[in-house]
Length: 378
Image (cartoon, rainbow, N blue to C red; front, side):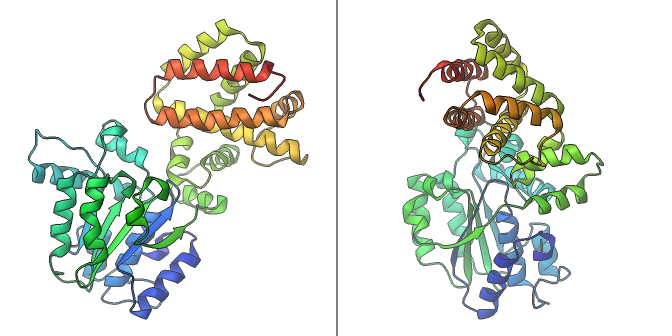
């Protein structure tokens, strides 16, 4: 992975190159970006740049042994740590070897990784993911080994949000006093879910979302489609998340509008029988389609709110959606629409956490019905 392989993010790249050329690389850095951002990819490109043996002024060469090993995630001076499953049926070393092989395949397939994608690869419930005390102990052992061939040993810790207090405290000492020529790159999403003691000791590197234009370029590189309208919908829904864009591109976006329109009508009419039937249908959808449907619904509600504030036509929706947005927006006030959007955002989170989808959807539907018929905000 090189900087030139990552679209956009020029300011971050320049900042990191300046740090590398100053010979004052902070030993502990926290790369922060939204889920599906280029956070991990940029951290990996930075490691490649630091250890390149034929370095250029703005990028690693991509050809030297160090670059090739880094690109294949097999460099002996790179250590990767990530939340995984704890299973006492397997020997720890065997389990680590198996999981690391999955990890390498996972990252090489798409470097703009998300925790949901990793959960699907590992095939376990989100709640079982963790950094165990044993995995942190092993990480510390590897970090203390002298470099084999590179200038720096780089320890990657992806999603430090999953470090519990015990594991985090075990890691804290080596973060405060890292071995010579050892760097720690933590890549995460939400500092509020990380241990304060760790966050306070890290230098922050903020990685923004992909822009719509960058997402379009990425999709054009990896996917061959001439459906401009569909691509526009996907980019609108993905909101800078490349992994979500891929999933949405392969999903049933053409069905989501009809589902959302009929669902809102049933909620408005307080048609409980219809809502029960819709909950049954929602329960039969795959989890991925359920999540994508909520993403679509959120996007459409945002467009309704935008339409209330500015009357010009948006280019991110199709004609049928535009007509619905206008009628829907004229029927309800802004506060109620905003309240529904907030609910959808919360319930999308619950779906990700494996809540019972039938009960969840019916409860959401009844809550929205109450919002529609209430003269006051709830």
